[in-house]
Length: 154
Image (cartoon, rainbow, N blue to C red; front, side):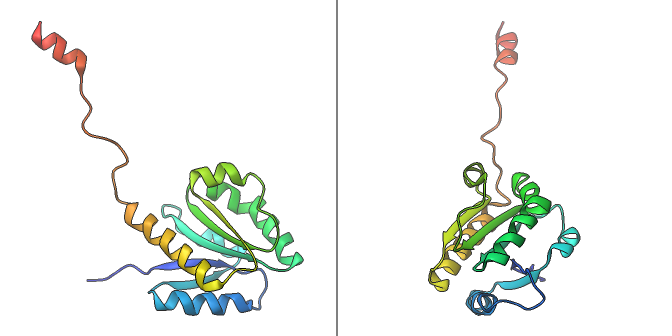
């Protein structure tokens, strides 16, 4: 049996990976999740029918500016359509329009400094909750046709 790969995307702003990537990758590896770095140009190659989880770490001012650019170009649309769940670890304020996205369950914000293990475990819990609920039917029980019963009994 082939088991699907469990992965979370890591938004990479520069060619050189940040130290936080290696820390988070090590933590996720212990629970069976692969952390994949991805750049903005690679977003078009993602499967459009699948929901993705991504981590955005904004520690520097330049990272925050690049994150806002990403948000305008791709992230907003993907979060509003429910195809991307973004975990924002930042020393800056939350992204704009985040309350509507938080209600929808596609944007989660954690302020830095934070223990990476604690943040990673919160992300893992959210990831597996979402993965386990993906195949569940969102509706209730079978619909009843009250008018049909009235005609039948008449």
